[in-house]
Image 1 (tube, rainbow, N blue to C red):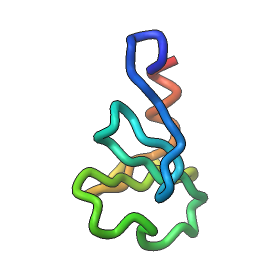
Image 2: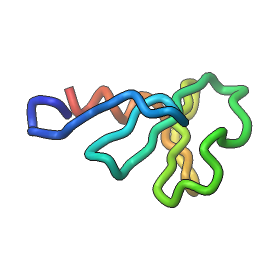
Image 3: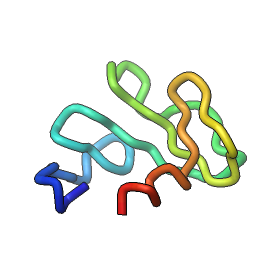
Length: 66
């Protein structure tokens, strides 16, 4: 993501903020809920998933960006 000119920062809520718009919260398979409630574009990124659903993405998808 950095090589394509995106800005990744560490926000007060969540784990990563991409381009000041997309908030990512990373956790394991047992991660429940979202600490970033009230944030319009917040996503949960979980390890141990094969497919995503709703606002939850599998962690392996980010390996495709490398």
